[in-house]
Image (cartoon, rainbow, N blue to C red):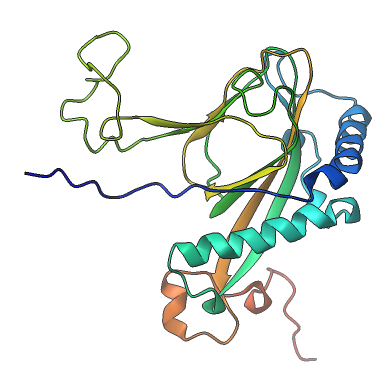
Length: 239
């Protein structure tokens, strides 16, 4: 009898052909942003991340216009591959920030709870396409095929071979000029950079809302568009 597999994690990736033409400006801009920050909030073993240092709105900087355009285009493609009618949703880049990882620095396991879709773009990667400069790792929290909890622990040798039915993580080697898009709720992290050069990437958090004019039923699952929101204390009252 066959064994069927279900519920795949959809990770989108695209190698952008125009990446080499934009690398110099993006790299110089990110490194200048990092240098301008005087107070460091990352431990020595942690990569420098702009979101922890007040640099989290690079999507509003015209020097990043090209990659923002790419993120928007490919995110729509990703959603269409997932079967969504993109005409019924509105998408917003909520925040975006640079990440600089140097020798023996990593990004710990985390997820982006305030967003729906996340993206990473690799500006500069030493030994591109290898695992030496730190891999992006996605972790399976549900473990649907782990028939006994902890069966795959490194403290045992019960799992004789890792395959598509029992794998607990997906590993992506960093590749210069590559854009990766994934569900923001997915647990992920980045392994140590073992090279002497910095790995530079850009991260994006994206939010979906209902498109203006959608039926009210859509608001059961998607936030109304921000144009319909009202901040406390801003309502005008008649005299």
